[in-house]
Amino acid sequence: MARLKYKFNPSTLNFEKISYGIRDYTLSALKYLFAGLVIGAIGVVLYASFFKDPETARLSREVKFLRNQIEELNTQIDTLEIFASDLQDKDDNVYRSIFGAEPYPEHLRKGGVGGSDRYRNLKGFESSEEVIMTNKRINRLQRMLVAQSKSFEEVFNLAKTQDEMLQSIPAIQPVANKDLKRLASGFGMRIHPIYKIAKMHTGLDFTADPGTEIYATGDGIVEAVDSKLSGYGHHVVIQHGFGYETLYAHMSRVAVRPGEKVKRGQVIGYVGNTGTSTGPHLHYEVIKNGEKVDPAFYFYSDITPEQYEDMLQRAANANQSFD
Image 1 (cartoon, rainbow, N blue to C red):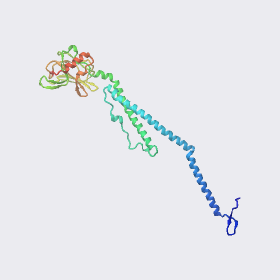
Image 2: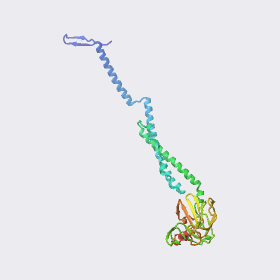
Image 3: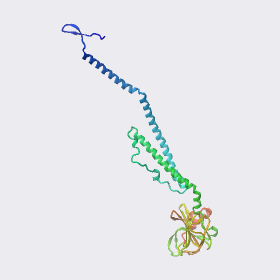
Image 4: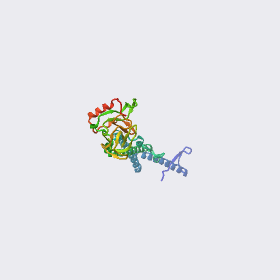
């Protein structure tokens, strides 16, 4: 039972009992209710600041774990990118160069990614930018590794055909040393024997007796056999593959036919004096990727270093050619 309360009445000089109505009780109740709500709200705020419910704590730990994993993933990507870049450098400058192959095309290494916005499903979250950037790095690394794999396939195929390539590249003299009188004219500007003007001589002239055997300088297929009254006269063109062709001109007689497979050292014809020629000799050319090059750089299988050096000196002399 509530204690009775009194108040002093100055008019009567007496203490009178205080009476409470419904309104007083209602205001009192609201006052206590408001105070309770304030205290409760303060309690909730303080609890939320210092304590977390199990689900919130679990989610917080998971977010922290995922952020750490993204950082670790980017660290690993850094290492893989360095490794992939080093592998690419070795591939272009070491592995492919061994077989005379050009570096793998840069536009194929970079590749392309289709779609206007392939990361749109990752947008709209607090960590979207970080996640999208990580995905881009992973996709770029994937393209690098796919391109590297294709490049290694090419290198592997080159390695498998290395023996065939080494047998096909022109590597011996077309006229044996024992039959060779002299190296009459080398590659470069020479005085033409008929026109008496400086003209580019696109091969080497080997002087030898008529009927001396002429050898294929590498494995290949006879691409052409032709006979002309001027120019190369009776001549043979051999396709060796790997960008190489050889031409043998001014023959007295041809010993092969078009489409025939020949081996290095096989007799393909005989020294003559046909076409535009001023004496019995063999005019020999090496063509690499469609360009005529100095044949002197392709004799390394049947002569000694001393003989090779002597041949280079004689081939370099500016003299008159035989054709």
